[in-house]
Length: 292
Length: 286
Image 1 (tube, rainbow over the protein chains, first blue to last red):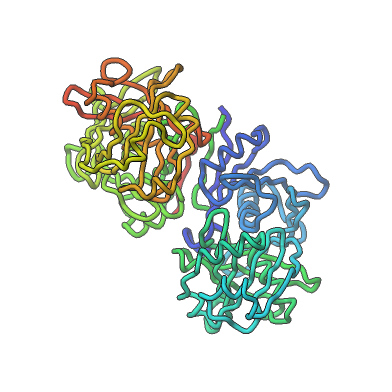
Image 2: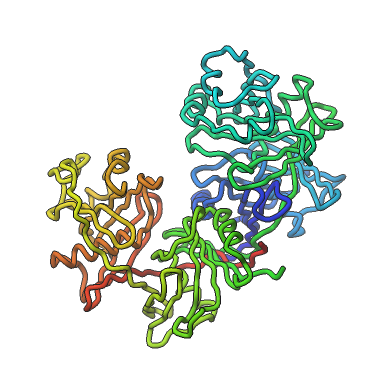
């Protein structure tokens, strides 16, 4: 019988249930790929991560992430949630406010900020690049976005490891009330080998400056509650167009309300143009997992 | 806010990961319905149950059952898991292998078998009956999606949920079946369970359950469909196993290996049960 520490957290959340759930298994040495995949299928959460002792110099810990179907090289919300669990368990300490996560995508730094109203953790995301931006007359893209009243910036295809179409809506209320055309989004995702559409709007008078909706067009079709990597591609796009909201390259995003959640993501584009994606994490379940 | 005891079980499973997961929240008396629904959505499991003090002395324990979308009056796999969890946590003690569960559907009898020191619960299914719906021609053809059909005619049964039940010729036909999910979704009820006698091994029957009509391509362990199949086989004098008891294998095609224990009692009522594993034990802050 092998008992390992298990924590189920809510990521990008000020309170339990607002964000994106994640399962974290600590002391994962000894679990093989098949066992990790079976556990990730069994938790049924978007991602389950496994924490190992680091093997590379300077790394705080090593991580592998699995969706219920396959191993994922990198994703934002599992990185942020896992760092919270590692800190809570006392397995690593930040050096100069940074943790260094070792994973398939390489060594990635995380900022740990004690901050007001609770600790915030942000991951530096892989650099996203612009693949193409299109004018509204482009039939392939316009057809897929007809349900969304357009904003100022043209739709653009960004690649940050996974590809996302970022599409501005006219305003917050039209974004929140829009009914996505799922067939069109799925067709666009397939045709451009992308995840789907991250639709966004600029916001005023709230605790956030951007509201976003992440519409995943395939293989599964769903609206994501809180998307760290997708929002990072949006931040890179806004920086590219010199259109970042907020102060000093920092802004907050509201996401997930349309699917019963209420997540907040803290985005930052730093002086070097690197994009940090983060937020608060709440531990919901703490216990042990017994998986032979 | 005090932390509540919390389990994630694996039901109809002889080992972790083989069956159908279930989230179990103890000490839920101060959670309101909205909080339960939110948590059941957050676990993302097919069902989450909440333990409450019973409202009648006739019940040993009380649960409420939620899917991510709604509350259910009754469901098989959550009830099997609930009985196991009530015993494991010391909330209830069976008398001669009997417990009474209170849930939204009322009082439900539960039986506990003891084997090799473990408790194996089974719950009585609502009585299954065929519906008077004529099967489409393609469902009654000699071959379906290339697989040879068995001898029983296809029929739509109901024991709460509706399931089309279709016998195939043998285990290989069930295990290798590649169904047309769009055709199943277009059936009345949109759900089809196929079954055949098992070739060898522990199980007597192999089962697969497809429910594209409710958004589930294939289910790994289905109490309701298995209980209806048991009743159908009983009515045709074809019950496998011994003394009205047999073992069904389901879910291997999905990488699981669920085992369901079926029993038709002297009154012709179907009971469904199985082993329960508790891979995850902890506390919940919600």
